[in-house]
Length: 296
Length: 159
Image (tube, rainbow over all chains, first blue to last red; front, side):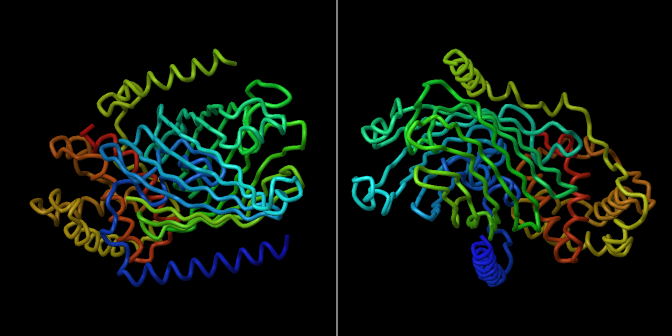
């Protein structure tokens, strides 16, 4: 654990130093911005493609498009754990700071575990997620004289591409939809952002291991994020996401991470995290999470 | 649970189809106080360099606003000296510098300017750049911005 943290600290400082240097080199981020929203206030891309933290969606609408604009971004994320390599990539559009539409692909490379299970080394399970998020009320950033957070409702339509396998492992289905409600508030004077999300889901391990198992009902799961704004470009924070434990073959637990998100400008941001995804089939999985996002 | 999901879906469709429904309408929302005093011990005011610091900040801010294609048109034809004086006075009151802002309220001033939310946010961004250049501590910047942010309800008049 200690080495992971120090490795992460080294990686973070290296990348930040590089980005800060690059930022200076382009003569400040003067007028390189296209759209309205303030830096980082659109969140980054969470693992299923919605705008949020790394693990959990926020109530903010992704992209830098403000109320009278439309923006878009794309991301690429990798997480390397003890036994697996997870990549996730996708894109979203934010329409008038009201509606967010997203698509994400997750590839879960089982590496040597695949061989041990007789699937073949590097056997990869994939999931597609189409996301919709609608802002209901509030403004996380501007309504600083009110405690009302920004609230959004979302759905993630998930489709597992390895249905036969996940059903053989005990999942009931290879398609399912998650529903969530998120509340997000930036406490600007304190420089702190807080988010809480409640998710109704049937997904096992985000959906990588299909949907439904011992039962085929929705499970209500809590997720949360807290972030501290270090400066205009850098936020650091932590997240948690509880998951159902519904597949008979292996235990499933909560995922947590600590992260640093650096926005060079409105077009490019980098998120580094140390994520602990809980037990995934074999044992507890943790590792470095790296995510790059570009948009306009 | 199935009916719950259907309810959620129906709710989402409802909000999708009538986005204006849930939106706080600027006209019906309470006006933001133009200059709420957020500090009384003088420390925040000192973080901004007191009166001289605010004057220098506004000089920089106006230069940035006039150079920014997103905000230029709002400021190019106004009495810039007066705007800067009014802003110094307003910021001084907010920061606990002991001034009393005597200018017009924000709603009246911006009533006919046709400000969009993106214009408002562009101005905030330019103010952040100006404050960064003056090396005003990030925490102090955010305390001021938090006091100013609710003004969007009076300043932004376009949907």
